[in-house]
Image (cartoon, rainbow over all chains, first blue to last red):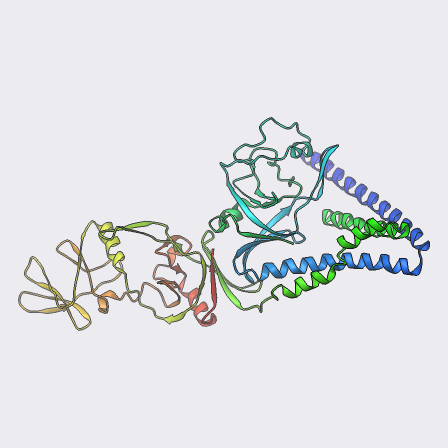
Length: 219
Length: 263
């Protein structure tokens, strides 16, 4: 019975993903068709101008990434480097890699209930560690988190341990947490949008090295 | 894999939408929006390129040692590659109150960046004074410091004194016998542990640090052991202890000046 339920769940997930992929492919086709139609009506100069903007955007993103990577690798103080694409956080010092910690990166998406919505995504660039939270500390979690999980928001949105045995908060409010045993984040299949989830054992292993002000690079 | 592909599909769709948006703005000759897009897209690329030029270039990849106190493990690495890894013993974290000095010693492995300053073969351990106090506390004995030129007169009429580089016992009959000392088997006389002076053979323990040592400064080092069962535990006075075969590999491989990162 349990196995059957799991199979059904898996099939549902696959169907949903395929549906999303299909919808995205359809959107891309529509965008491309519109772009082609607009370009037909442009002069050669306008076309070159549009191409230059698109190319500059791609190059700018690549340059920003390279700058962040170089700054992190050149930082001789102990720091954290969050590799969003590769899904890990490293404890680095200069070019030395002290520890690599697998991480689950929270998705980038619009959260909240209309009209009060916002786009949540992990940041890019340099941040600083502001708070180190233990299992007995509490952090007020955003009200949209309950909506995102399909739960009613409680009056009290901060309880000890809701961000796991250890958690970090950076400037700008990005949360790096471990899986808690209670609260809205106590679900191994869910990662808070815009946040990073690490293994508690990894956070414990580096705990003594963490202090407010420590630099955290996201790239 | 499907989730990764979906993420790529979202990113790719956003990219295609951005191209459409740019085409729309250029086609409609929307000057205000165009300026904003140009700025956001980084047609200020010159400043980004200049920032990149100012950012430090990636340093050459020299090998280094990493020690995790929590995992009690050492890695010898180059870049992201692990060349060698082995378990270690680290500081016990215990305290020792130094009598008379109003000072507390904490036996911890220091965190931070150290460097291999010296490579020692068959290193001897010169126990510091606190070692004798620790032994005296453990065995509920007193403590007495032996000073060159000042013999200790014992209850049986014999004396403990220094002759050359040896701590010796001189009996009442004038017979001279060198004493032996090792870790946990210190010289005990009249219920007190005798602290031999520096420079005597009785203040050099030859087997404690194993076959090799990488000296890191400030009295700390990575060394072998005569107690391999202790490796993997938090039992040392702050040094990093390894099995003799592991420290032998490092001794023959690691160069002077190699950075050691302890976290």
